[in-house]
Length: 161
Image 1 (tube, helix red, strand yellow):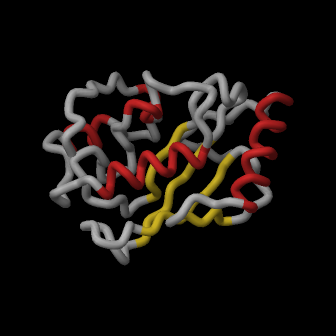
Image 2 (cartoon, helix red, strand yellow):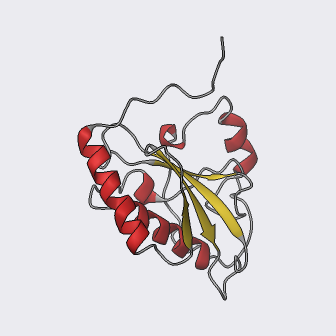
């Protein structure tokens, strides 16, 4: 018997499958600049390579995002995290969790994986410092056993970084 830190995911609904297939085709035709989808046979989990924008603190750096789609995507936001090592940023925790309102409270079904990626790259590009959130150690310690960032009550108070 094996144990995992995350509960098994429910299969995607037909609506979610259709939407993701459409987004994947659009991505292949017109990928967002600075991103590369790592092809797998799993429509429910995407791994995306992120390249830091030129002229920013993250220029010439590469990171990976993991996007897990819920059963009722796009009505429910996907879970988006950086696969460690995550970039040092005031809104990105060392465990890969991202404090960005569109991933939680401000999610809209009109958003796409591409729009999420562009928002994350914009957040990285506008940063003036490469540092972890001040509560990084406490937060990461409290997230043991694979707690999802969607279970966090985020406080979106700083849009200047």
